[in-house]
Length: 88
Image (cartoon, rainbow, N blue to C red; front, side, top):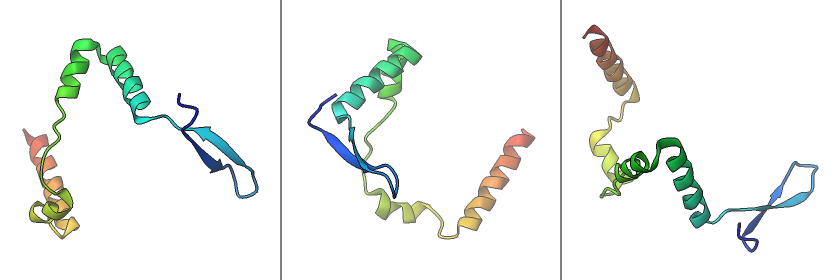
């Protein structure tokens, strides 16, 4: 862990400030790869990582084109879809 990269955190409203070490993104990635490899094995780990795509576009702007404004209508559609799946 990088000792030069830390964050101060107040433990409680009455407590004192403490310095906690914060991992670098490189350290987090390395630990993540190790955890995935251990849990999935090296081949499935690679397949899992390859399944992610960076994508394109601007989600905050474009979501309004395909998400309904009425969340109740969306919920109703999802419930209907679930009923249809249970029938099959």
